[in-house]
Figure (cartoon, rainbow, N blue to C red):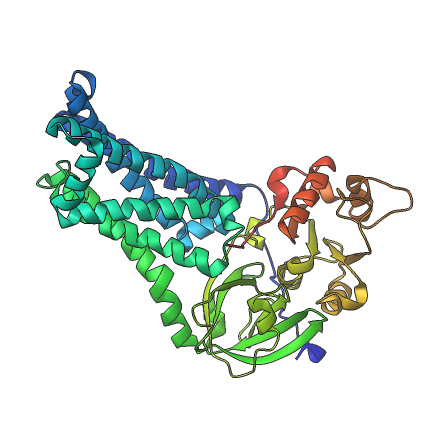
Length: 471
């Protein structure tokens, strides 16, 4: 198919200007206001319920009891938000994108853990003082007092595991599959912690406003997670009937996989977005892989160009036509929807070539509007380079291939005889880079280096678009 690649017609028009970004920001403000409002509502209901005196004028036992209850309520609310952020919910993804939602998810992990631990310790110490027992003795008394309390203690242990596994140092030592399984424990921890809130807690049970608030909150989060995280991908894959129809070698370490199915245009994907791909074989169905599409959406195929990076990407180089596939998505905001300027610069390297190639195919532009910069090891072995050349020739775009070893460890460009800094060379390659939207995709450290040179070249930060879709 690549030998006679038929390009999809580009978008005929695009809305420019910063006003559409302001609309996104207003949506973000609304969602964040709702999140803060839920926290304020919890504190208000707690205080209105006669707990002000317990916090301000009380003996240590009563104070610890009030602290235990309030920290539990706040931890639960934030934990539900924490889970919703990575449930791959479309309305969150459209506003924030996968990487920003994931970053916020990570930041909330430690505060949740601290609140849960504070709740547990305050309860334990309060009960120990009242019963005149040691903390260790009271721990075993609590654990054996009811099934719900035992589940709650287990939920605390699971939350600790989840948060520790989210720390960057720990994540570097975990495979994706291990991390994925560990984070499924967060769902389990919430599920087994819920009963003790209603059976042993005094802030919800028997109180109509509080009960309605928490039941509504739980149902909203559970329904979003159940549908978008689990059911929608299954239903969508059954409806479209995805399967591999062809593969094509693009370079020594990259292969394009063409996936066919029914009514592909109804998937609603856009160039620059990514999907979570699962190979539906007996051994591989449970492994999820995030890949950007490498061709603009069309009704004939969905294409991924996958580099050989070890693990399952090596196996995918040899996938056979006819293999059934499940796709979750599309996800991400690395699309023309974030474009505000007439001029565009597309910068790619390595794994970043597929979404940049798809954007080059689909973007609305006149000749001269788009500048493509492709950082390659060697031109002869760069995936999708021939397609980018053809696209550039057909549409009047400028394509610059940067080939060779880096000039120095801090540079993202190849060596230059005049030793010009990256930002100066960038301004020579794309003279209007400061006046354009810039879309960058490549390895994360490389992308950060490119962003720094763009800022030094005068490109405003709001015109620089990059999205990391790794786990």
